[in-house]
Image (tube, rainbow, N blue to C red; front, side, top):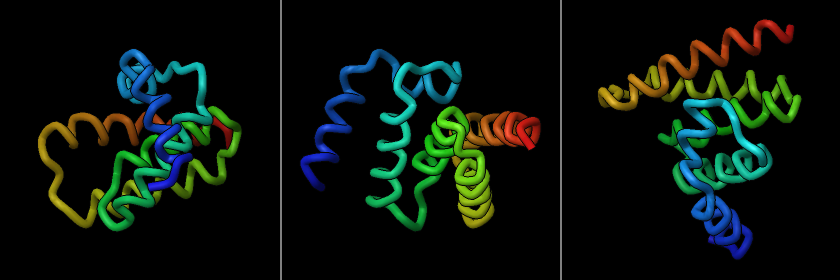
Length: 108
Protein backbone atom coordinates (compact mmCIF):
# COMPACT_ATOMS: atom_id res chain seq x y z
CA UNK A 1 0.00 0.00 0.00
CA UNK A 2 1.25 3.46 -0.87
CA UNK A 3 0.95 6.69 1.09
CA UNK A 4 -1.62 7.81 -1.48
CA UNK A 5 -3.66 4.69 -0.64
CA UNK A 6 -3.40 5.56 3.04
CA UNK A 7 -4.64 9.06 2.27
CA UNK A 8 -7.63 7.66 0.37
CA UNK A 9 -8.50 5.33 3.25
CA UNK A 10 -8.14 8.15 5.80
CA UNK A 11 -10.40 10.41 3.77
CA UNK A 12 -13.03 7.66 3.38
CA UNK A 13 -12.87 6.94 7.13
CA UNK A 14 -13.73 10.59 7.84
CA UNK A 15 -16.93 10.37 5.78
CA UNK A 16 -20.18 9.65 7.54
CA UNK A 17 -21.71 6.54 5.89
CA UNK A 18 -19.51 6.60 2.79
CA UNK A 19 -20.90 3.38 1.29
CA UNK A 20 -24.50 4.28 2.05
CA UNK A 21 -24.10 7.67 0.42
CA UNK A 22 -22.37 6.31 -2.66
CA UNK A 23 -24.11 2.98 -3.22
CA UNK A 24 -27.58 3.41 -1.76
CA UNK A 25 -28.33 7.11 -2.03
CA UNK A 26 -26.27 7.95 -5.14
CA UNK A 27 -25.32 11.23 -3.43
CA UNK A 28 -21.76 12.18 -2.57
CA UNK A 29 -19.71 15.37 -2.62
CA UNK A 30 -16.40 13.91 -3.84
CA UNK A 31 -16.82 11.38 -6.65
CA UNK A 32 -13.06 11.44 -7.25
CA UNK A 33 -12.60 9.97 -3.77
CA UNK A 34 -15.08 7.19 -4.58
CA UNK A 35 -13.17 6.53 -7.80
CA UNK A 36 -9.85 6.41 -5.97
CA UNK A 37 -11.20 3.92 -3.42
CA UNK A 38 -12.60 1.75 -6.21
CA UNK A 39 -9.22 1.68 -7.92
CA UNK A 40 -7.49 0.85 -4.63
CA UNK A 41 -9.85 -2.06 -3.97
CA UNK A 42 -9.30 -3.44 -7.46
CA UNK A 43 -5.53 -3.29 -7.05
CA UNK A 44 -5.68 -5.22 -3.77
CA UNK A 45 -8.17 -7.90 -4.96
CA UNK A 46 -7.93 -7.90 -8.76
CA UNK A 47 -9.63 -11.22 -9.48
CA UNK A 48 -12.62 -11.19 -7.15
CA UNK A 49 -13.34 -7.60 -6.23
CA UNK A 50 -16.87 -6.46 -7.07
CA UNK A 51 -17.14 -3.50 -4.69
CA UNK A 52 -14.27 -1.63 -6.31
CA UNK A 53 -15.78 -1.99 -9.77
CA UNK A 54 -19.20 -0.96 -8.43
CA UNK A 55 -17.70 2.19 -6.92
CA UNK A 56 -16.03 2.92 -10.24
CA UNK A 57 -19.27 2.49 -12.17
CA UNK A 58 -21.04 5.08 -10.07
CA UNK A 59 -18.10 7.46 -9.71
CA UNK A 60 -17.26 7.41 -13.42
CA UNK A 61 -20.89 8.08 -14.33
CA UNK A 62 -20.90 11.13 -12.04
CA UNK A 63 -17.52 12.23 -13.38
CA UNK A 64 -18.99 12.05 -16.90
CA UNK A 65 -16.80 9.17 -18.04
CA UNK A 66 -19.61 6.95 -19.29
CA UNK A 67 -17.27 4.77 -21.37
CA UNK A 68 -15.28 3.75 -18.30
CA UNK A 69 -18.49 3.34 -16.31
CA UNK A 70 -19.77 0.87 -18.91
CA UNK A 71 -16.47 -1.05 -18.84
CA UNK A 72 -16.63 -1.28 -15.05
CA UNK A 73 -20.29 -2.35 -15.20
CA UNK A 74 -19.23 -5.24 -17.42
CA UNK A 75 -16.44 -6.11 -14.96
CA UNK A 76 -19.05 -6.34 -12.21
CA UNK A 77 -21.17 -8.66 -14.35
CA UNK A 78 -18.19 -10.92 -15.11
CA UNK A 79 -17.28 -11.23 -11.43
CA UNK A 80 -20.88 -11.91 -10.42
CA UNK A 81 -21.19 -14.60 -13.09
CA UNK A 82 -18.00 -16.31 -11.91
CA UNK A 83 -19.00 -16.89 -8.30
CA UNK A 84 -21.95 -17.46 -6.04
CA UNK A 85 -23.04 -14.27 -4.34
CA UNK A 86 -23.79 -14.20 -0.66
CA UNK A 87 -27.36 -13.00 0.08
CA UNK A 88 -26.16 -9.54 1.19
CA UNK A 89 -24.09 -9.20 -2.00
CA UNK A 90 -27.02 -10.14 -4.21
CA UNK A 91 -29.25 -7.70 -2.33
CA UNK A 92 -26.73 -4.90 -2.82
CA UNK A 93 -25.16 -5.48 -6.20
CA UNK A 94 -27.99 -6.81 -8.38
CA UNK A 95 -30.34 -3.80 -7.88
CA UNK A 96 -27.32 -1.45 -8.02
CA UNK A 97 -26.21 -2.83 -11.38
CA UNK A 98 -29.74 -2.72 -12.81
CA UNK A 99 -30.04 0.93 -11.75
CA UNK A 100 -26.66 1.87 -13.20
CA UNK A 101 -27.40 0.10 -16.47
CA UNK A 102 -30.64 2.06 -16.75
CA UNK A 103 -28.94 5.37 -15.92
CA UNK A 104 -26.05 4.77 -18.28
CA UNK A 105 -28.35 3.73 -21.14
CA UNK A 106 -30.16 7.07 -20.84
CA UNK A 107 -26.86 8.83 -21.52
CA UNK A 108 -26.35 6.99 -24.81
